[in-house]
Length: 557
Image (cartoon, rainbow, N blue to C red; front, top):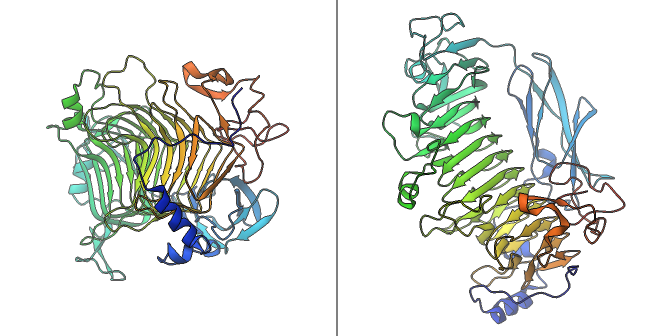
C-alpha cells in the first residue's frame, strides 16, 4: 500500500537557489500577494460578469467568470426565468430546446454545494427568429442557382467571394467604438441564416472583416462530408462552423499552415463569438509513414485563437504540430480529441479560459521542442495569466507501445508564470516524464483530485509547485486528493490527502488499457479523500462523493 503524503522526495530539477527563494518568501510572507505581485488591476467582479445571447432559433449561450471573491465556490446554478435549469462546474452553458424568438431572464448562483455564495445580475437574451437555409454542393451546384436544396450553389469559397453574405466590417485602421461599415448590403445571406454543405471540396474559407449581429451557421448536411483546406476568421464575429472536415490534404497544393485560425488584428479589428464544433481537423489523414523530418516540416497547426468569447467543442485533431493554442480570453475548449501531435497538445495563454474534458494523446518527438500535453507561459512582457481552469482532461504520452518516433511528454507544464487563481482538477496525466503537473510561479492555485502517473518507465512523475524562475515564491496554493508518484513543494503551497502510488497499478481497473478508474478493492483510495474544496463532479461528470466519502484521484467510484 502506498503512503498518504507527508514527506517529499528531493526534486530533480534545474537548480534554482532555494535559499534565495526562501529568503524572498520569508521577506514577503506577511504581505498580501495581490499587493506585491498583482498590480495589473482587480479581477472582474462575478456579479456583473454574466453574458447571454442567442446563437440560433432554439439556443442561448451563457458565460461568466471565476468568482475569485469566493474561493469556496464549487458549483454554479443556472436559473432561467427564476427556475433552476442546470448545475455545472463550468463557466459556460448552452440553454437548448427553446421556442423561436422566446426571450428569457437568466442569473447564475455561485455555491459551495450547500449555500449560495454569490449571485450575478439578471440578464435577458432571446432565441433568434427562424432564418433562411441555403445549400451548397460542389458536385451539382452552380453559382447561378438560387441556393435552395434543389438548386444549390457550388462551393462555400465561391459564395463568400461572390459577396452573397451581408456582413459588417470595422473601418481600418481599427478604433474601438468607431462605426462599422455594411458589406454586401442586401445580399442573399443574413445574420441568423444557415448554410448547409454537401460532400466535396469547398475551397479555402477566408472570412476577414466579417462581423454579424446574429450567428451565421455553416454546417455539414447529415450524412455528408464537406471538406475545406483551411478556415480563417479575422476581424470576424458570430460564425458557427459545424461538422466540416478541414485538411491541407484536400488543397490543390499542400501548404503547412494553421488549419483553423481565429485571429484578432490591430489593423482590421477584433474577432469574437466564433464556434467551431464537431469538425475533423488534420494535416493528412494517415501520417504513419512520415519520417521525423516530414513530421517536423509538414505537420500543420490545428486551432489557433487570439479572439474572445469563442468555443471549440467536440472536434477531432489528428497529425498536427501544435494542436490547440488559445491566446484570447473567455474562451472554452471542451470535449476535443487530439491524436498524434509533434508540438504541444494544448496551449492556454490568456485570462478566463476553460479547458475541460479533452483527450490529448500520442506525442511524436521530431525536433528539440519539449512537448507538453498542456503548456502555458507568460513571457516577453505578457501579464500573468489569471483564472484558467483545466478540468477532466486526459493526457496520454502514447497508447501504442509500437508507436514510431516516441517522445517523452511533459503533462501540464506551466514553467513561466505567474499563474493566478488557476483550478487544475480531475485530470488524468499519464506521461513518461517527471513533469506531471508543474507550476513555476503560482498564486492561489488549486491542484485537486488529479491522477498523475508514469507506467512507461521508472521515472517518478510529480506534482510540483515551485517559485517563479526568477526566484519569487509561489503563494497560497493547495494540493489535495491527488494520486501521483511524487509531490514537490519548495514553498507557497499546502498539501494533504494525496496518495503516492509506488507503481501499484492494480489499484486501477485496467491500467494496461489506460483505464484509470479505481478498482473495486482500492480501499486506500476509495472514500479516503478530503471533502474540503473537493470538486463536486469527477472526470466523467458523475456526482462526488458517491459513497461514504470523497475518493482520491480523478475518478469517483
